[in-house]
Length: 193
Image (cartoon, rainbow, N blue to C red; front, side):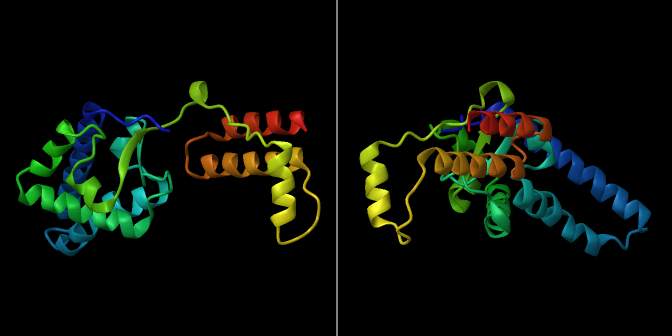
């Protein structure tokens, strides 16, 4: 299980995101001579929906090496990112009470996290990343063979490698692994076969 981000990391990331929003908003209004108001409505969606939906991180969260994910460790997606942004709106209406909730909860989830069903976790780094090898007993392999749709025999080492490779690809696509880290781990998997 990923380690939850602490309140200070989350607060720092939020302050950076708000600073970026304010600077971008001011620049848009200056550049467009006041006609950038319609563009400024889109800006929060870009910063707090589009970017996190694709990477699980806002710019501030990226700098603090934390990311947003669902409790089942799946990616955020556009729908949940939008719902989370609506939760931010509720937090603002309640003068920050929704943010304070995160201080007192064991799982560090604020009102916006509870509404969207998300959590903020620390990003896995190379030092603490180790692919978990799935151990399968002869009994479980026999059960899989008997109950599989195709009655072809299963080679355990080949199947385990494919699962590990899929997990590795997922970590790389989610931005948790750099390209170098990805290639190193991939080479280790190929060496074991």
